[in-house]
Length: 87
Image 1 (cartoon, rainbow, N blue to C red):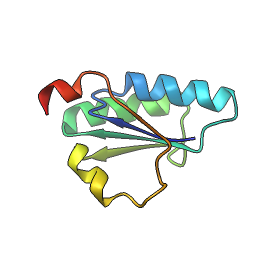
Image 2 (cartoon, rainbow, N blue to C red):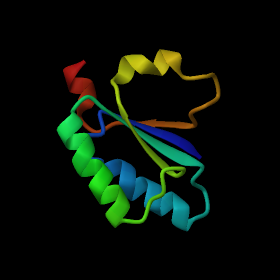
Image 3 (cartoon, rainbow, N blue to C red):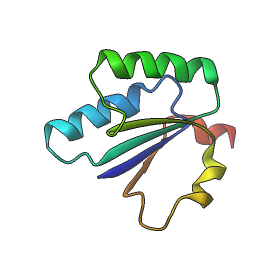
Image 4 (tube, helix red, strand yellow):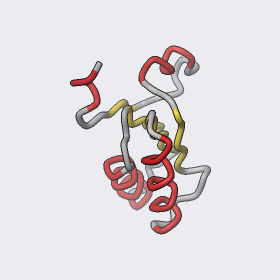
């Protein structure tokens, strides 16, 4: 599956989902969108600690508006935890 987490913060939901999907051999890639450079640094550190490769897991300094720039059929699952309350 090709997944995207919008407003991923420090990436807990995205990493846990990515690891679970990888264990089921269902992960194509996970993209984590977030607007905080500091949170993205923490996310990157934890990505490395948990053994997710850059091919499996990508962190983008971006917000939900960048979804318009994604190619059609490039995302199977869109998820978010809390960010929609700020939109």
